[in-house]
Amino acid sequence: MKKAIYPGSFDPITNGHLDIIERTSKIFDHVTVAVAINNKKNKFLFSDIKRKKFIEQSIKHLKNVDVKLFDGLLINFVIAEKSNIIIRGLRVLSDFEYEFRMALMNRNMNEAITTLFMMPHENYTHVSSSIIKEIATLNGKIDNYVPKEILNEIIECINDIKSS
Ligand code: COA
Image (cartoon, rainbow, N blue to C red; front, side, top):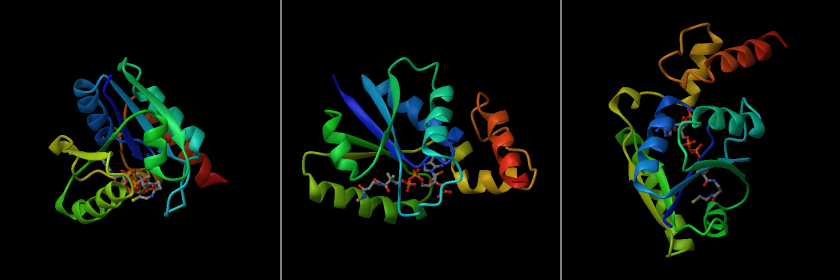
């Protein structure tokens, strides 16, 4: 069985992420979306449990996808999951340098692990989690950018944070 791991912060998941998950699920037997508990930004708006739950609510239509939290080195998680494929999305040229360095470093640490890049639909190349959070915080519409299953909950969470 060919398993792929799609890692990220997902703070929160966007339609761009979902597009990559859907594409990956058509190519691999199984996809695990790996939600980083920590990363170098370390300033998540949503808790790890919430970030994982948002993804689970968004992928109910996909039968070969699950969601797991991970901490520590990504390559160790990939090995523990009995996979050797990391999926990353490339939206624009400016993503490339960061992704290139991360993929090469992961390959240097474990030659058996390969990173594959996928392009999301062009409707989402300008979307990022930070932009969505900023727009929602300023009461702008984010309907086209986050999965419909989680739209209201994201807005409620952001309103709670604003009023606390
Ligand atoms: N559509 C829309 N937006 C997308 C996207 C897509 N298809 N793909 C990425 N993005 C956006 C995200 O929304 C995020 O936006 P933000 O910066 O505004 O929040 C940004 O691109 C990058 O996010 P993401 O793809 O979630 O990656 P990340 O850089 O947050 O996460 C890890 C990177 C978690 C995979 C990486 O840090 C890691 O592997 N950590 C574990 C420790 C480790 O092994 N380190 C060594 C690595 S060599």
